Image 1 (tube, rainbow, N blue to C red):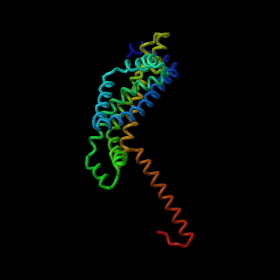
Image 2 (image 1 turned 30 degrees about the vertical axis):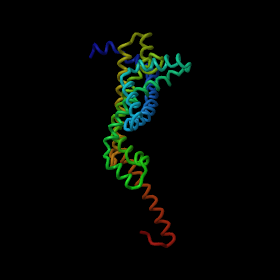
Image 3 (image 1 turned 90 degrees about the vertical axis):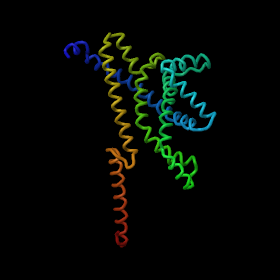
Image 4 (image 1 turned 180 degrees about the vertical axis):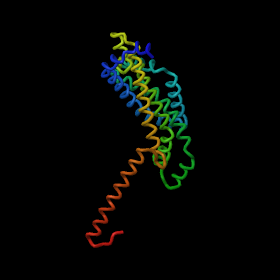
Length: 258
């Protein structure tokens, strides 16, 4: 421990906490936007995979291609290659979002595909038997149940996205890893700064895991967890307040309360 303390200068990391936290914030922002787009595109791809050819073939080709391409290759393709071919230049933020979205939408589509297939077929048939259209059955019956199943794995994808932003330094994105490199190149405090970056990544992973576990419990039937109890308690107090006002109005009018 003494030897470790001699090579880690926490005071230097603390003095540069503003730059480190800003780099972490950039990584989280890129990952959050990429996750939203990846979920939308991944859901579309999952539906296409469940459709008939050629839609299923196109979705399968997309998924197999981008699941096999590293993030760094996709980032170079998007930021440098696309601009050379089309003449359109993306900012590093947009290029990073596109790169992560292309890759993670392929993974999330597989998550949603298995989640959609896990919903009992009888639920679809029950919705159709009640006169609901196929589109309404999908969005009102099937998709909510599939999302409950997919939530834990989507949380893992977000953690992976935040870590993979460290590769985007190749296109100039000043996220946490790039910030550490810039600071270390001047101070040579490599071990200190990389250790601080690892701690920040781990802390964010714990926060994301807690948030998605809370969301998973809230979406269960019946809802569980502190957030669900809080929401349920507020609804109950609101109903009680409304009933109290109704009873007060009845008493003023001389109508017996229930």
